[in-house]
Image 1: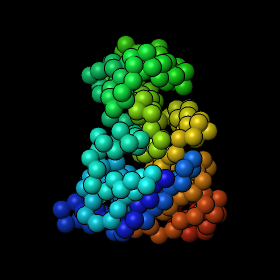
Image 2: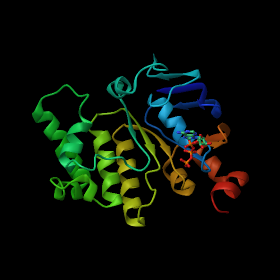
Image 3: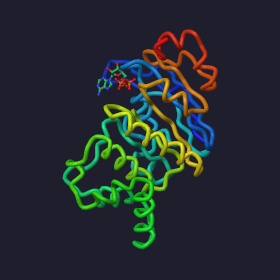
Image 4: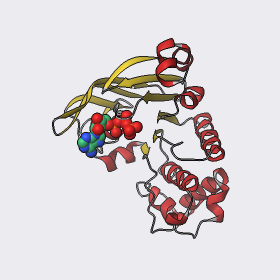
Length: 235
Ligand code: ATP
């Protein structure tokens, strides 16, 4: 479904990604693990077209999207849930959700139906639908950010650090929703500091160190790998 080859990204003269190769098959959850600054966020943002690529290619469903603009990439079926949520704090919950559907050409009724489905997934968002997003708790904002991404009816979701700063209860809820999305056929590329948690719901994983993939395999293999355990799993 997604094939990233020899991805090289620079921030001025900082060589942030040094030839990354990643593939994601339809229906999988694949996670990227690695320390702060390893290049996980940069990988997601360059796939979604937010950061220019210096070298390499990104193919999504057989289409070359290496040079495609971010809004077109969303239209093609890739949604990103950015680190730190980035909801529109001055807009209501419902308006944030409606904005998530900006690439969808469909009737208002069908878009309203999608919003109702988001409320079923996240009942708290229904209770808070007229509240400004900026007044929500961190966990609620994470739910809203995910709801907004789902509104674009993506086939692939790029999810950046969904557990960051959340209480265990919210983390559990968010990860339940990730599992449900997979069951519904959505493919997920997940970046997560909490490697134990990420590996527990992923099919496969890649380990990044200073802009390079140093290890990859099934989530089970990697969670049993001694160097991964030592560096990332607190063993
Ligand atoms: P974190 O978990 O801390 O977000 P990460 O693995 O997602 O880490 P990136 O944020 O992708 O890592 O950063 C990769 C490298 O690129 C780091 O060396 C970082 O300092 C650098 N970098 C990231 N964003 C910028 C930027 N806007 N300008 C300059 N350098 C940047």
